[in-house]
Length: 113
Ligand code: AMP
Image (tube, rainbow, N blue to C red; front, side, top):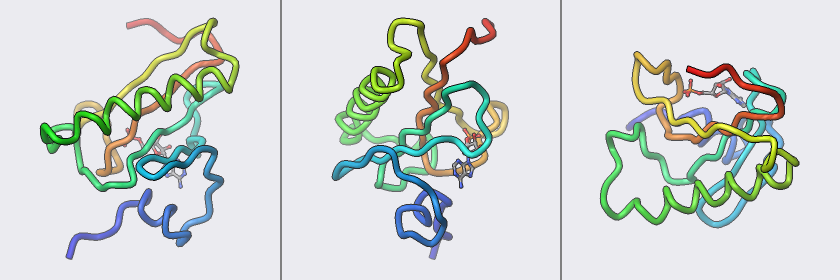
């Protein structure tokens, strides 16, 4: 049996966290260690360990996650000032939670790369 991810524990109320958005497939929380003034995580309820594990049938879910990020960017008032969406995958990208999540960063000028 695979250990639960932190995000599954949040969903199951085993770890306290304020869920700022939820629908049948997706939820969102504020990042506990924000890397920008606005730093949200958009997370599928379904556990998928990394982007490498995505299957064709997950395409709609990924599209929906981006649409949720767009909606939250508007709600947080950063749609015009700008924001960045990031998926970290595995070690070199610094992925620490092996349950895919989309980072939404903004609210200030972000360093370019
Ligand atoms: P990643 O490095 O892409 O795997 O991102 C994991 C993110 O989850 C990091 O930015 C962490 O700060 C964040 N994080 C870890 N635990 C929690 C938590 N309990 N609530 C909210 N964010 C968390």
